[in-house]
Image (cartoon, rainbow, N blue to C red; front, side, top):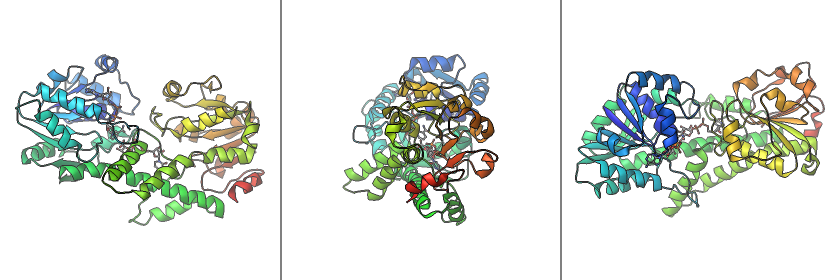
Length: 447
Ligand SMILES: NC(=O)C1=CN([C@@H]2O[C@H](COP(=O)(O)OP(=O)(O)OC[C@H]3O[C@@H](n4cnc5c(N)ncnc54)[C@H](O)[C@@H]3O)[C@@H](O)[C@H]2O)C=CC1
Ligand SMILES: O=C(O)[C@H]1O[C@H](OP(=O)(O)OP(=O)(O)OC[C@H]2O[C@@H](n3ccc(=O)[nH]c3=O)[C@H](O)[C@@H]2O)[C@H](O)[C@@H](O)[C@@H]1O
């Protein structure tokens, strides 16, 4: 099949590469000329494990091309996939300007029957808008379909090639047939539904996953107060098949380009339909607060924030999750900002997200470190904010030697007592008992 992907961001690039891997001829389009130039020269503008190898393989086979010429890409295609951004507007609603612009460009380029697929996450009714825009600019016959994307950053290639399900929202049998054919080798779980339900499946899925995270984070907060261990609680809950083990990792809350944006957008969608989505509003509020638990623990151990002036705090991990360089809505942004506001000196280190972080939050107080050990040097505490694999292999005896005070506040619950054997470390995590010398300091926090 000939496929044009409009928007070569995260989703457009990963799905374009994967559609090529399935044997299709794919042309990825983007407005950002620098991005397209990097891709044309064989580079990959995002950090995503496995993506470069797969892209190189398909480039070599001539099945994958990159251009900023929408007209030509659309003309050569049977299926046109819209994968442009839908960022939050001022009230949290999805900003559809890029979707509408893409629809206009597709309408102007139509030269025969095509299926126009919306892969971006869009509010219910948007596909119909896209249909109207395209129809207003061409007499050619076309169909519209919603095929939402469920990939996760950091495991995007695997998620795309081995999805749990494919959702196809379409009315026309011809479009359904074409899209089933396109996805049939990926999974037998292909759900065909109406367009509005497909649009809602995407938001409901993200909102539910976000709810699971905020739920377990509240359980973790209670565990801290009553002396239980949230990882044990999550294991015990997760073995119930009706609950399942996934997305029950307590920590400093969710970040990223989608959960924060999509939960707020669904609250708006509900509000526009005169429905007050109380549960989801609480999920968002719990998540907003959760990251500051790290700061509360710093205060409980080091002392009030006014005593942070001039003190060095190591920050391990800046990305919103491991295996990505994405820092959009990363809890690290608020935590580092709060440290700066209180006069502390954040010594930050992330294996891949340093440049992206610096482009969003650059401040003379921040020390940019080249290793986890360097970030620990002369620090009063280390805050672990992203569970990168390299942090899991830390030699805490070596770290203890360089710190002013051996204190670790783990925002992702990745360590246990065995990691700190023969050290003086004080260790605090989220929803688990603290341990180490003198953790009585924590009693005030735990109530
Ligand atoms: N990032 C993720 O992990 C996931 C994102 N999504 C959804 O997919 C959509 C895209 O997300 P991302 O890929 O993260 O966005 P992004 O912001 O990384 O990329 C969007 C790209 O579209 C380009 N663009 C905008 N208008 C264009 C036009 N008219 N023609 C050509 N290119 C144009 C931009 O230059 C940009 O490169 C969003 O709706 C998002 O919610 C869905 C699942 C996963
Ligand atoms: O619509 C989207 O963009 C995507 O959003 C999420 O994917 P992503 O944001 O890439 O990453 P996740 O693995 O879901 O993690 C999101 C955040 O939740 C946090 N998280 C996740 C799981 C958990 O148990 N606890 C937890 O705090 C992570 O640290 C991270 O900050 C969804 O998992 C994807 O299915 C969806 O396609």
